[in-house]
Length: 265
Picture 1 (tube, rainbow, N blue to C red):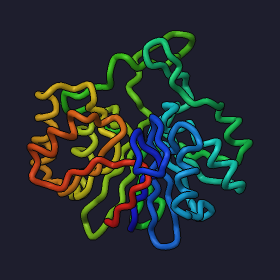
Picture 2: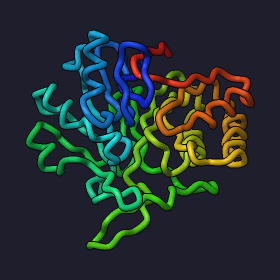
Picture 3: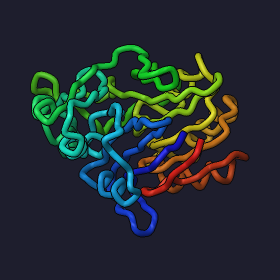
Picture 4: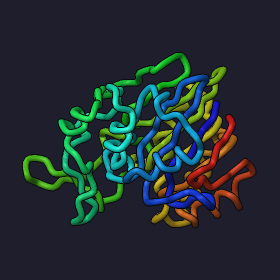
């Protein structure tokens, strides 16, 4: 299995970057796309890697912020045929970061015209025997979504608890690789939820710790240690400080992901 970083806030030399995340999972002859970045950067990087995007079997959108769903239209245009797209409930409610609109650049209907075949995820589902999609994680730790994020319901702004947040799981002999978008509901909540069924081996994606202090990051480290997670491949909203603290305090493989990288798992 390969994990290919098509888009991230940083990139290898010769590749493009933007504020966004897009990860391609290659299993056998099939590709599964997790998030799409903000624009067409992920597609341009895929072309530089000579990736045949027509092999994409399904697209999973972790949550409906523009930096994860913004490139969806470009992928749909590229794929041309009907494409399964997995989203959480109420993903197309207007989203805001402070006063700034931060939701999808297009409506659900516009994406459907481009070929999206939306499947709303309310409970854990399996795309095949190894790939599963997990709906929102229960809030069991101290972690909660940042108060800067809101959604618009009946013309009133309310706190966004990211009820649509999805996590991709890739299982292998009882262990699991966890792929997250921004972990807005809390990376501790997510991995503890996953650990009820599987042994978490690798954690990949964005952890949204860029604004967190030392004490919060150390609590997350304790959870990772308790679960005996073996490897972190993290970037996007994780934050440089959190990554440095992980590298210093975890005796496991910690790498910062950047656009253009390919990992064999």
